[in-house]
Length: 302
Image (tube, rainbow, N blue to C red; front, side, top):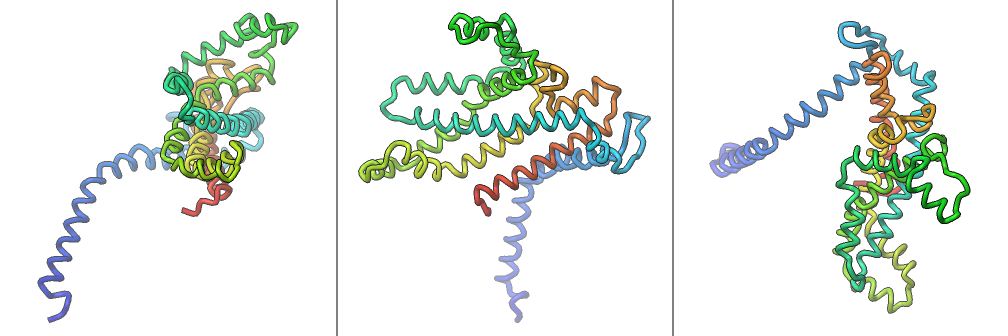
């Protein structure tokens, strides 16, 4: 009797099939949902990017929309602004989140719960509400200018919202204020699982607090730092609410982002859903490229 026809083999094979069948039953709904709401729209968006216009006026133009990107000054401005926010805000936010997490992980610190809640609270506030508040705070007669004038730090109000440079600074400050606490929670939860004996041994060996931070904390948090960097990168590339509600992309498109340009192409300008889909694919390409770079820089091979 061959092994394939033996009762034991047939029983084992049947059990494996049953286990696989039960496993697929558990994940089939998730697979269908992801395919329907993620992959199908991605394919449809790509097909739409090969067309121009909207509704019944859609016309197939091939890759002309992608060629058009390189000759579109508004897109280039939006792309430049988005990359600038990414290069300045994400590292700043990551560093602040790391510093806050280390400080709030100190067992001798009093009122830790209050400080943790205060720093994390912006992450759960309404995007529109906090953006509108920032708009009033940084107005010409807002509280920020009033405070700086009262402290004699400046001699005249800063045009936070009407000057291209200061408008970008305002957007960066707003994003940093909102998302620093969100990233801090990840680092804080990871630090609380670190064996305290590692720091005690480092102290005995004469390591300073700064040395412990760079040679113990940073290496241990490397996977979490990679995760938050990628998530923050994706979020910044999709930046919309703050720009829309604080500066409306102005002055003169100086703060416009890619996401806001997609919105304008779809609803503000003469609607061109095909070209808007093309611009949206730029975000996808940037996410893939930057995530790959971050994985390579971090040395993560998994």
